[in-house]
Length: 183
Figure (cartoon, rainbow, N blue to C red):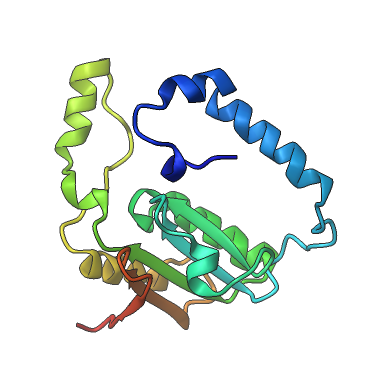
């Protein structure tokens, strides 16, 4: 399967000749299933850790953190922001599946730094309905990591908040920079 990074600009017609991206994904899955070797993995992560990360395509949480399939729960959204739905997932992860640690990963050059809450108004003007969710944009990734750590640590639903750490991943170098929650 070719990735978007390996498809030359102007090759849209070549992609169309191969079918849709979803068609290619389904074909790749059939090849993957032929040698699938993870049937014995438990739904509870082996390392008892949940990772909350941005959905950015440049960030591979398992690879960047030296983890393998089955090691962690990975929760991703735009910005890696701790929202009510992230708290919901973390609560289930901790209370039903045994996680004890939370790792938060934002990154440099995040698109959430280019948005404002005006995005909701723009959507309302376009589709005639205001989204019920907040955009959760931010101007400073480190400050947003601090806010996300605070949201995790103060949630009444999460019994394990002693090991909550936050990082900013540099998309140019692949390195993590830990964020001091007190700064």
